[in-house]
Image (cartoon, rainbow, N blue to C red; front, side, top):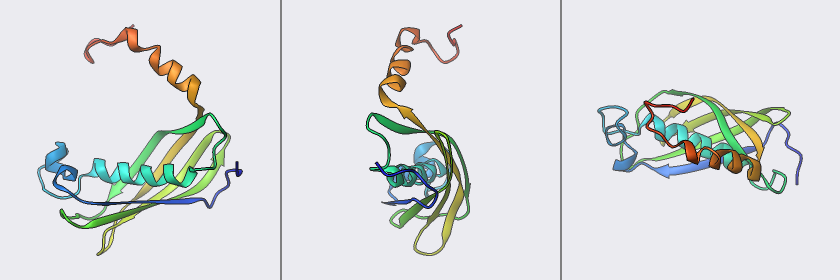
Length: 140
């Protein structure tokens, strides 16, 4: 395992399809890249930057994302996202995230991830299964 230090980078790419559009996602009424897909792509770049750098039995989970969607991207264009690790504070990792299509920068922001023990994290998630309720009726 390599120690996590600022400067690690990762990239992710996708070609925009109809299913990636705001209208298809229900996040808007226009047939261009939807902000939720942009945020997901940027988060995927952060995950990619950590591949091979976390201790065995550990993973990272997203805890915060702040994205500015700067410009529209039509169906058919490719989008590339880059995440750069800028701060390590214990288990908390902070990234600067950016995205571009072939014409211009289309997004920027910040993203935080937390390193977790995978087995403990999944046990905590699975312990909630018995509380499965309708979202309007949260467990006490």
